[in-house]
Image (tube, rainbow, N blue to C red; front, side, top):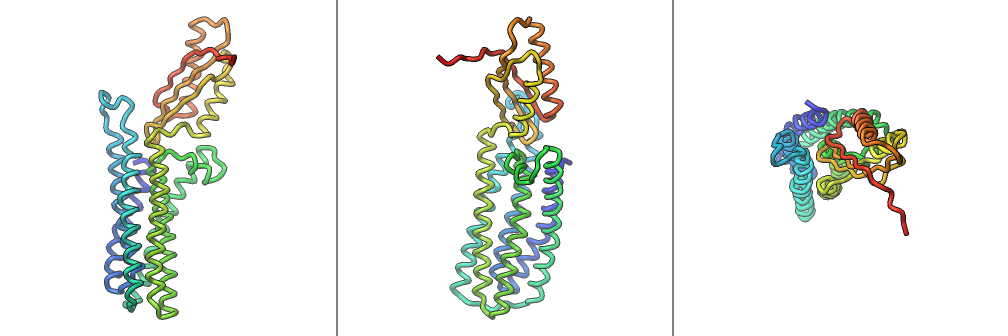
Length: 306
C-alpha cells in the first residue's frame, strides 16, 4: 500500500464512525452545526471512497488503448469528488443554517454534543497529523524548504485531497464548537445556525480550490519547478551538449512523467557519440527522477532570430 492510499484509509475509518455519530447527535440535540458537520463527514467519506476507486483504476493495464497507463484516473476521480460531494455538502450546510436561522430552537442533550465534538477533534486530529507527516516526508525527499512550496508543486491529487479534507475537518470542528459554545453562553441558537453556514462556506471554498488544482492536472500540468531544475542541471553538466532548445513534460499520473527534450549538441560529434550522450542523459534523469515513464530526446539546431 502506497502512502497516498494509507492516508485515505486512515481518514476513511475515522470518518465512517464520525459520520454516524454526528448524525445521531445532530438529531437528538437539534444542532444545525452538527448537522452541517454530518454533511461534511458524509462528503469526506464518499470522497475518500472515490479516491480509492481512482487509485484502483489507475493501476489497470491496457497498453493497446492506454499506452502511457491510466494514472490520470486519480486526477479524474479527485476532480469528481471535489465537485460533486464537497460542493453538494457545502450547499446543504448553507441551507440547513439558513432554515434554522429562521426558526429559533433549543439545543438539547448537551453532554452528547460535547462528547462527539471531543471525539471528532481526537480522530480528525490524528488523521490530519498522519497526513501532515507524509507531506513533510515528501517535502524533505523533494528538497523543498517549506510545505507551501511542496503544495504549490504537488502532482499527487489523492494526497492533496486528503490533506485538504483533514485540514477542513479540523477547521469545521473549530467553527461548530465556537457556535455551540456561544449558543450555550447567550442562550441563543442563532450562533449554532451561523456555524452551519460557516461550515458550508468552508466546504465550498475547499471544493473550488481542489477542483481548480485537479482541472489543471487533468489538462496536463507540466513539470514541477524541482524536476525542471534537475533536468537543466543534468544537461549543463553534460559535456557534449551546448544547451536546451526546448523542454516539455507532462504528468500522466502522480508518479508517471513523460519528458521531451530538444537539445543542441556540440558540432563535430559522430552519430554514435550523440547516441551515447543521449543514453547518459536518460540514465541520469531516471536516477534523479525515478518516476519518469518515457524520455524523448531530439537533436535540434538553435534558431537564430533575424
